[in-house]
Image 1: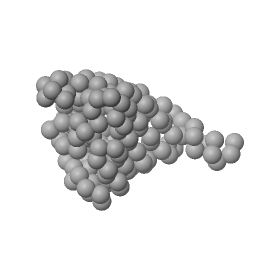
Image 2: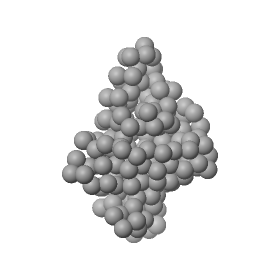
Image 3: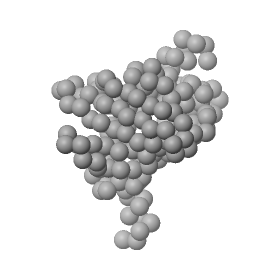
Image 4: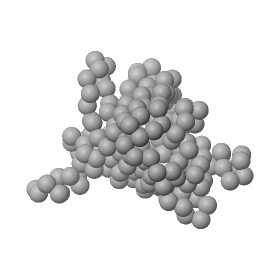
Length: 158
């Protein structure tokens, strides 16, 4: 297997059409008051959400599972281009504080006639199993995001 194929296999790309304009979708990634309403897989909460939203700034989240298990995620913002794009590092910690699955996430928000063509590109996972685990979590998270932005869009008449 060549390195290009190996990289492609350990990269996650998810595309969605979200029911809100790019400006609103982008904003929901930038403020704790939005993130706490939709972040994480189904039935997870976000009891800790801290971010310094600027290039070079850091974020740190605690996702709590329905069983009460905490999953910590943190990273640094590398690029902020409102409302078209966002890039940040992604690190997960296990219960002992060990870092695993250190990757880079690139998000794009493209106008699609009042909706947003959203793309998530996360690379480079250690294994395809890690990529697949994240695919499941992100899929649920993005469904929650779409419900949230759709309601916000209706609320504010966007």
